[in-house]
Image (tube, rainbow, N blue to C red):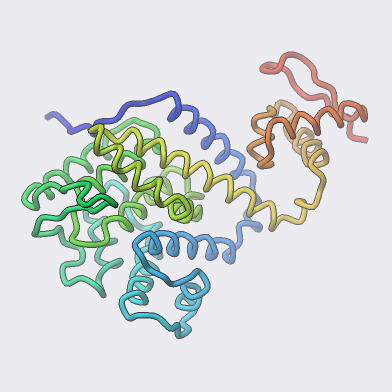
Length: 325
């Protein structure tokens, strides 16, 4: 049996971004569990929900959405408040969804849109068009094709050996292309990308990629249109990988702000990391400390001049000799 494979091209940009993100995620694994607090996780979950809903025109703020989560009353339209409640409900189950089960995606849509749509959790029964600034930018496949297209997409998701960072982005685009529901496609597409990524590395459940997409909303829609024009998801995958990279970088910076050790000077931080790992590279230091490589090199030169470190061997195969007095 031939399995449908979505059209996309692996580019050098994708490979570079995937490698950078993977290295950044590796550094996050060193974050102490006591620092990854429920408060920080809740804050990032609110940012995910806020970003995704605001892309769709919801005007409620992070503070108002936090208040709704806390059971407080908020002024706003009934529809906007119900959108928030649905998003909260669907994201609360994010750990429980199996990214490879179509039935779980339908459940997520039912939780997300249950108080807004009569047919929540069911595929659309009518034609839909997606509108851009110049009118209709995409006419979705007819409703009688939706079930088979979605089944094909999930069959591919179940067997693909591609890197999950790329897979999640390809899936996101293909889902938006099919546009299987009468409403809520954007927010479910973004949620399911996080589900796929979370099954790859749990920390992605708490990294608010949606807030970065909201920050670059016009570029998001432009990438969708460019992918539609060229007949493959490549431009959109590159955009999403850039967004993930920024979201992970922002997450690391947020952690560092909450870390008492973040008050250390950059050269002290570098010195500490070299004590922990004598083979750490300049690139890894740059990612872990969210500093430019030139800034890292400047701090390293200062440490060398102070006689605190010495480089032994080549840039690739060598190591740092650290003099801890």
